[in-house]
Amino acid sequence: MPLYDYKCDACGARFEQDHPMSAPPVRICPECGKEKVRKLLTTGGVVMGGGSRSDAPSMPPSCGAGGCGGGMCGM
Ligand SMILES: [Zn+2]
Image (cartoon, rainbow, N blue to C red):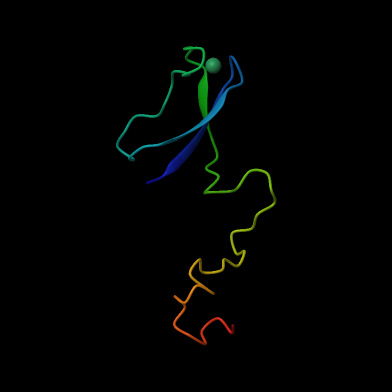
C-alpha cells in the first residue's frame, strides 16, 4: 500500500494518506476543507524526530525470557 504525503497550502496542514493506486488523489484538505492540497514526495516510512535509523538493531522481545531457543542470543 503506497503512502502519500500531502500538504495544504491554505492552512499548512500536513497529513499522510495511504490508498490504492486506482484511487483519486486527495484534493480537499481535511482541516480547512479547501482545495489547496498538493502531494509531496513519498517519504517511504521515514521516522520523523528521534533520529531512528531503519537499520537499527532490534532485540527479540523473547530474549532472556526462555524463548530464544538457547545460545542464539549469546546469553
Ligand atoms: Zn487546509
